[in-house]
Image (cartoon, one colour):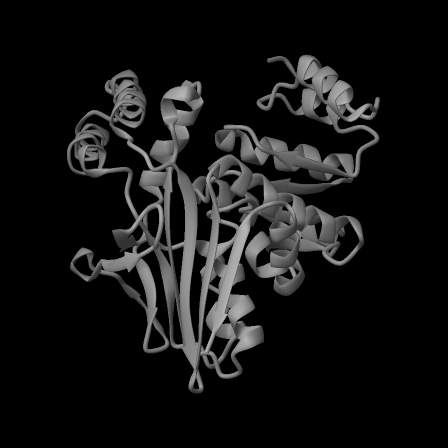
Length: 332
């Protein structure tokens, strides 16, 4: 659907005329600057990480703020960090890594710190299974999947220091219904890096991710990684086809997305679960919750920020629960 078509559908559904659509070229700064006239913030939700620098520069030159809900790729982070001084000196607010994962996990740890004085341990694990065959899979989506692979890092916080996690130390997590037990491997997210500084008592944390299923994890994914290593340019189309085939053909129900944290400290424990049967809803809800805090002025701070470490966590989880996401908390 075109941007104009989507705008017309939204206007009809919500009986308003506040939505409009236009076509923009993310690789063309002038096209972006033209589109950014008379707006307060650009929300980047497209598979355009390779053009992050151009989009960010156009945002700065337009004198507006920035928020992205893209994957946490090193290429995106490096492009934004290179502009940190300009962002700060211009007084603009740039929020990156919005959405679900990244976006929620480190916020869960920060929430735990509000409930458990002296928080010591708060690992977060996640599983998401999407019915991929119901969705279009563009070449840009396949490219971003590969960027995610290239950015893979297994750091976890142990005994107060960041250490490389081992695959032999995968966690066996019981997510309850509908997912049951899943083995989850360490997968570092940049939003976790500052947590030991902001929560001095914290000694153990990290993000652990379940896979896409045994066929994809142990057959398709190793093939893609091998092709990336031996023929990164010549195998691009083959890798894209493998990604699409693997996700659409091998992913099985149950579908949905879940995050679970088991936190403890000072003799208290908190088990927190965030779930929705539609991972797209679980991406949109926290982004909207973040924007609500931005729009009322709470988050309009100059600089480059991560959603999970910028939002006020108690209100953040109250809002996403209000939007229909299951947020369960058990404190003992």
